[in-house]
Image (cartoon, rainbow, N blue to C red; front, side, top):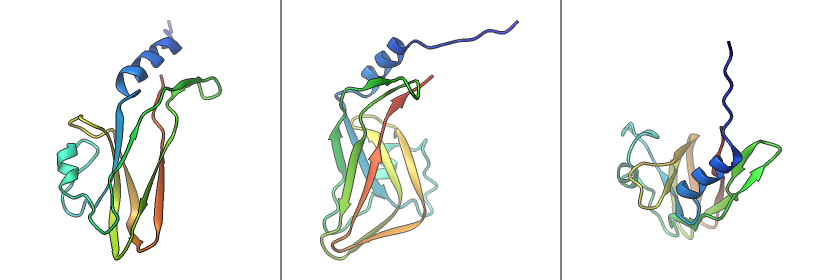
Length: 134
């Protein structure tokens, strides 16, 4: 006897509203090095290895209201773009860390395959999209 569970669109919307909408999403560039930090590490852990450099500013955007995506069958928050620009010198990182302001743990990490260096006058942009899906 098989049992199938389907989470309603309204429940996915409710969860997204509580977890994300109107909160502030933060994105920072970090170098994990020998720390061993992972997606299970705290925001404070990651902040201890956050990049520094001329022009580096941690990304910060208020999360908007989402909508049901009938094609992908999930509730999607509008994508946010985070641009990091170096004004002089250079700064490097290997991990992009995404978290909700005020939370203890990160939402997710994006690990680059090699160390990325942003030189003076260069910009690197990351598009972050939050979803709830069953």
